[in-house]
Each structure stands twice: as structure tokens, then as C-alpha cells.
Image (cartoon, rainbow, N blue to C red; front, side, top):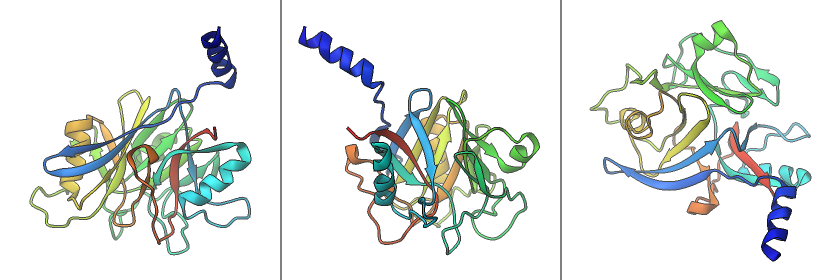
Length: 245
């Protein structure tokens, strides 16, 4: 009888799904990995609060979600930004476009073409090369442009060097073929672009993956002890939203 009552209460409350997070190793490098099932979980992008001030921190996003009786399940920074924390490229939040798509090359990692867009739609997510995105303009409820692409149709970015000495903490996202699962990764030690992209291609088997950022990168994943604390405020933040209780 007690079991039946508990089952009924769970059904009435609705599903309580959360990202599955774990620590992993590959070729002597450590990674923190969170997988999100888009068919079951709510994934959003966050930039500003209701008063138009930038969130900057995971704690600020959690404070805002309290108004909905919700909280973050997992979160990480989700794209490059200017000094005022405005996104460098395309940014869409809850259907509102705050920044335009940029398809020309330029300085820094963002301009290392091909770059791409992380697009969250209804029950799916996609990583799409920016110029391909411009041609078909898919419907995205949330979107964040960043760069470079890590994996493009199963191949590493053509400018990644296997013998590179440029190593940093790096984070990014890869999406499976049917768009039902997005996998977010942050390295736990400095890695090269080639090493980081290879993890998405060879281990996660994601046909497309996108780099988010470098040394400022942080992950909030309480179940694996990742607090996401840091002194520097962030620009766009991506995270799952779950019931507060």
C-alpha cells in the first residue's frame, strides 16, 4: 500500500530526470562528462536576470530558478563573450535573439573556421557548422555560437595539430546522430585541441562537437563534486533545469 502511494505521488509530480555525470580518463587526460537526454530533460541557456544584469555565476542562475521552484541539475559555461559578457556570436534565449550569427573568419579561437552553433530545439539538440546554419536557419529555442568546431561530420577540425604544445583547460559539447543526447565535457587538466576533439570523436562517437571556451571554463555537477565556483564571471551558461525538491 505504501509502495503504491509513493508511486502515485511520483506520477503526479511528473518525471524528475537529471543529467548523468561522471569522471573519465582517456590517453592520460582526465575529463568530467555530463550526458543530457533531450527527450526527457529540460535544457536551457542563461545570460541575464530579469533586471537585465548578467548572471555570471551558477549561483545567480539557481537564485532565479527558485522563483519557478526549480534549480540547476548540471551547468557549464556555453560560449565566448566580450568584456561586458555579451556573446561574441549568435545567441538565442527562450526564442529571443540577442546577438546575430557571425560567419566570417577572424582572430582567436572563435574565428578559427569552421566554427558552429549549439542549437536546442524541441526534444533535441544539434551542433551545426555556422555557414550551414546560415543556409537552413533551423528553429532553435536556445542557441549559442562558438568556435572552433571540434568534430565535423566525424572528422577532427582540419587545423588541429597532433603535436601541438598549446594546452589549456577546455570545455565543449557533442551531440549524437539523432540529436536526442547532448554530451558536455570539461577537461580536468590542460589538453590540446587535438586531444580534446579526439575524445569526442573516438570515445563519445559524436559526429559533431563544438568548443565552448578555455581556461575560464567551469562545470557545476554536484553529483561528481564539481562546484563550479570561480572568481571570474561568465557569459552564456547552459544547464538542465529540475524540480527544486
